[in-house]
Image 1: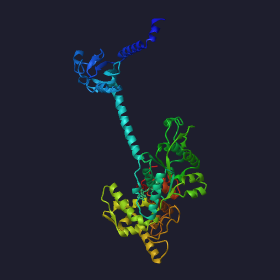
Image 2: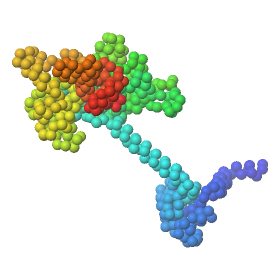
Image 3: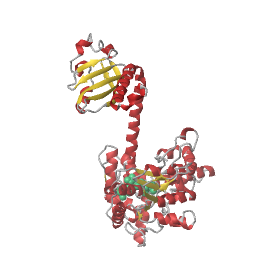
Image 4: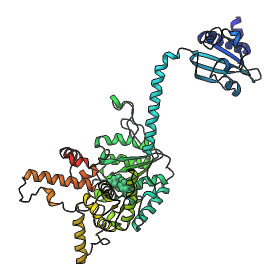
Length: 521
Ligand SMILES: Nc1ncnc2c1ncn2[C@@H]1O[C@H](COP(=O)(O)OP(=O)(O)OP(=O)(O)O)[C@@H](O)[C@H]1O
Ligand SMILES: [Mg+2]
């Protein structure tokens, strides 16, 4: 047998040879080697390493042998390696001599005791890579910033304590929602616009075991139909060419472990309803352009401001999906249905407004409160908040009077007068406590007639027809925006026009757009 093969029968020898060869190659390849003993004193450096001696402030190798390693090499972690016995495979060492890519290994004796450590300079031209590191650092901090912002957006702002109201109906909502929070089932929130559906959805999430996971809200009405599927279920890599090539997670996936809030579920196209039903039943989603499904665990809370049962009857909403969602329905009362909560709500909202605008909270007097209680509030709490906010900004006094409100809601007198005459006539269904309630399911109630001057009538009735039409349009849009608290999606729906048409009209009548905080769609 030739000697070279013979060597493989002596495993100790093979290992020794391997170690020697490895070391030879390594010392060839790397830019310097340094060895320390178990008290982290330098015992040996190779020739290449000695090139650094001058920049470290020494004149020759003899001067550094025997010294504690950090006296020679500032910022080194060799002592740490000796003390822990753990290698540091890759690290960047920076000191007065330069910036190095280094690697550090403990040295063991035959019994496994750490007797020292070897440090390797793998690369010493890191300076040339500095611009790259700088860029990477900047990208990294930008990423961290974006992640922080996302996490903030995915945390909920509301808990049950934010749902103000002690009326029987408000308490019923809270108790049902609390029950929903511990049950982990699908929840359906029904209620007019501005009644607090999103607030309750967030509160349920915050009180559930999913609270530490994301809360992802999707407004179905605000997303163009063609984009909905990708938005919900994601896109597989390569499904599209161009910017979206890499694929993208859908909202279902993003809500994994947490809660997916599907707002205005009634606006979901029928084809997508089928896919949603499957996702709810199978707990699986199939990204666009993929034929693989992935499991997701998201609790769905759906909300609707239109009566879903009617949509089912009209064939616009799948009945099977409706039953699947309707496991635990919670109906949020309109403001008209709980006038006894108005005072507490005003107080709460005035405090909130004050906090946001960094001013002292204003109060509201009894007469003004009664006038507010007589209003129909089609936009519910959101509308109330808007009215109070505008009154606070326009009124200098610390106490909001009926005068202050008149500035913001000119029709307040008309409502109050109607109220009084109704009360005087003893008409049922009128009066602060006796307003008609819940008569139209969750449909928005009729809006009070617009002020005739708003529809372009001059004293002598001389306005042209186009002028009158434009004035009528303006009045209707203003009213719809006010009623929906500036929510353009819902204002368009109230007006029975497409969202795009509303945006076009707002561009034509910029004075309306200013008062309408468009909701991010
Ligand atoms: N019971 C309540 N207590 C305190 N604030 C409330 C209450 N209900 C609603 N709000 C406030 O009213 C505003 C509208 O609430 P939210 O967005 O939850 O309504 P919504 O039912 O989701 O409306 P939309 O159908 O228009 O989306 C928010 O500012 C919310 O904080
Ligand atoms: Mg909402």
